[in-house]
Image 1 (cartoon, rainbow, N blue to C red):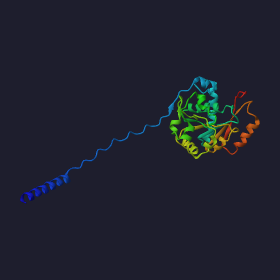
Image 2 (spheres, rainbow, N blue to C red):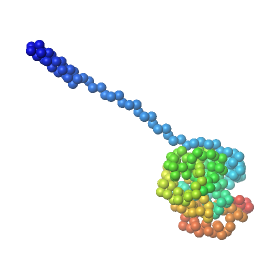
Image 3 (tube, one colour):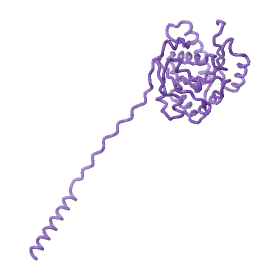
Image 4 (cartoon, rainbow, N blue to C red):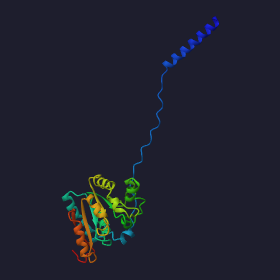
Length: 265
């Protein structure tokens, strides 16, 4: 029994010593997992313009074009005077019918505004049934406003930066038939407000569908500050111009641009 008691006592002492050592041991903190790398910032895609497409679609606001550039500088000055006087930041450009030259005017005006170092310009194609801004510029966008509205593609991935300083383009990559329903959604309203307020020096130009061919423009006009109407000299019927004037009654209508005028100023 003495041997057994001694063995039990020794085992008890060894156990107590081991417990004491555990209690007084320094607890080392677990190694923290490596931090996840920060997300890559969204970058605006860059695409050079096609001189051949610019020439074919009469995009004339480029260095070395002389009098044609001066005409759009004059238009730019008149438009900016009206917009600044009224505190306007966004402008819709429309026409009575297709073929009146609204997209040509919208692009040339946007480029002319971008030549002025006092502001940056965002050109947005909202003619979703017949988008043509990217075609006029010779661009091939991978995604656009349609992808943002329908597939939640981040807007930064939909923007395209041409090789013109202070100008960014938001194209429509794929034509849509139910475009008025999209332009009238709360999501589009939220985007229009964000595009207007994100940068204090930004002017937003919207290339809208013709007023008399679909209801997209009327659905969208409450989201913009002002509107310009492009009519084509010798082509746009007086009845169409009057119908547009009636539709724009009560809007912030800045004026009419006579495209292809046969009369010199």
